[in-house]
Amino acid sequence: MNYPVGCMVYSFMRPNILKMEGYVPGEQPQEDGYIKLNTNENPYPPSPRVAEAITEVLRRGLQKYPDPLATKFRKTAATVLGVDPDWILAGNGSDDVLTIVTRAFVGEGDQIRYPYPSYLLYSVLAQLQNADSEFVLFEKDWSLGSSFWKEKERLKLIYLANPNSPSGTMISKDVIKREIEHLRCPILIDEAYVDFAEESCLDLVREYEHVMISRTLSKSYALAGLRFGFLIAQPHIIRELRKVKDSYNCDALAIAGATAALSDQEWLQETRRKILATRERLMRELRGLGFDVLPSQANFVWCSHPERASKEIYERLKARKVLVRYMNYPGWGDGLRITVGTDAEVDGLLNSLREIL
Image 1 (cartoon, rainbow, N blue to C red):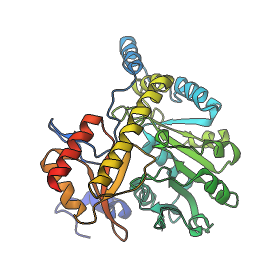
Image 2: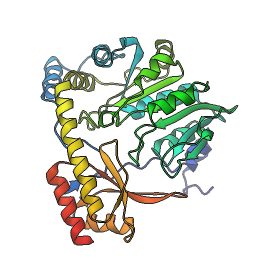
Image 3: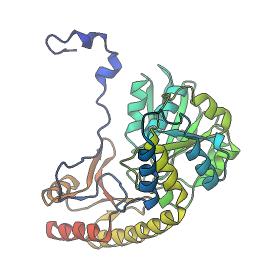
């Protein structure tokens, strides 16, 4: 390996880190004027309760450490989800939760399994642990074959994004339940987009101790800029995971804002209704423009055009200040992942597409 001239520190760094490419987040434009439909953010402002709760924390001051267990949030979440607070672990975004779980279950030389294509962070988490990744290709109908559910000696953790990104598709709860009956390996069902879907696997956590669910407030609760996520698992699992997390992994502002957001379920249902209605219109209009569009259970759609290259469409949209996510999965193919924005944002996207096509 070629180190930069004079940088001897590199020789002390773990080789697996030097080999990593790292996770690349979606583009965040540094100037105004973009229609931003590339990172699955909620296009609507969060519940007004969020600003009120954060303002109250600021009034009291930030000189003291936050509650390390985010107790107020866990109590609120417990009421909303129908579990006890001890079933919940709070994190600095769901990525923090995924990191905690990976660090707890997976060591050097162990194996992590996940579907492909799916959330790109899973492979990065495996590399951080110097563990092996085993990805299982989705079938052409976005189902998972029997190999995804088979035990292996070194397999320590399975990740399943459900709904999946970038496809927006889901594996039904009945299918998952049938398959995990004979599975001993821990499985984390990543439900980042579940509030836009028709069902959740929350009941499976109550029934099976090796099932965990992660959630985020970035998408459905419009708090991508706040960073807050959480895990739902049986209490004895949560107890061990607490040993792994950073001491104060959630700050006082995030805890207050997340608690307030989760308490406003009326806001969630109204915002969800608007996004689902726009999602259906977006899929319909894209199909009318000749795109192949997968039915979505998330706040985005996955599509490609049979006659035009996805990367070309992405670049020409970007030139018009319309950002979507171009994603290319070696061995699978490429396409466009388009966030469901406001009706006005979707109109701007569609108008640009009509000009391009």
